[in-house]
Amino acid sequence: MTITWDKGVADETYSIGISKTAGADPGPKPDTDNRSWTFYDIKPGKWYINIKAGQTCGWGDVYYWRVDVPSVEPTLNIYEDIISETNRELHINSQCASSVTISPSAGYIKPGNSILKLLPKKDVF
Image 1 (cartoon, one colour):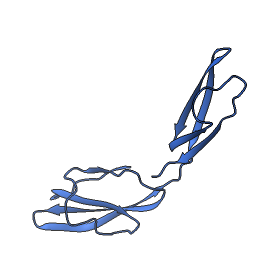
Image 2 (tube, rainbow, N blue to C red; image 1 turned 45 degrees about the vertical axis):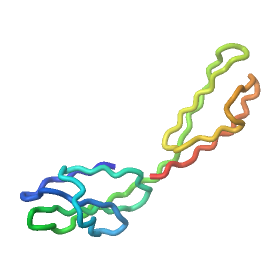
Image 3 (cartoon, rainbow, N blue to C red; image 1 turned 30 degrees about the vertical axis):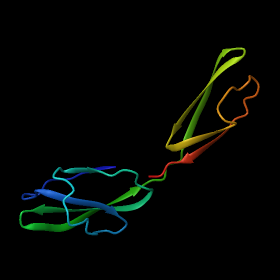
Image 4 (cartoon, rainbow, N blue to C red; image 1 turned 45 degrees about the horizontal axis):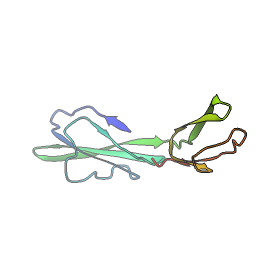
């Protein structure tokens, strides 16, 4: 998740954090002098992005934005290409899943024995 903000008149640097508490101090050290920041691996739920601007004279007040990160269910798209009577290719495309378990394990699957159990594992944000 990337957030951008407007620069204040005297802003030189920014301290930014994400937490479950609105207005929480993001810390005593500057994180960036740019007007954008990217957070990675944010879990679903209600979050607050807390930011304060720094100048030569010290830090300003903490400002915050509420962000609702939705829960996303993993999806699987599966299709099979028949190459010949005895040769097939199985294609699996997963979205929003950190891993996919195939049972039986990947290997040769005989035509007519297309019993696969695919278990998507939900990604952690």
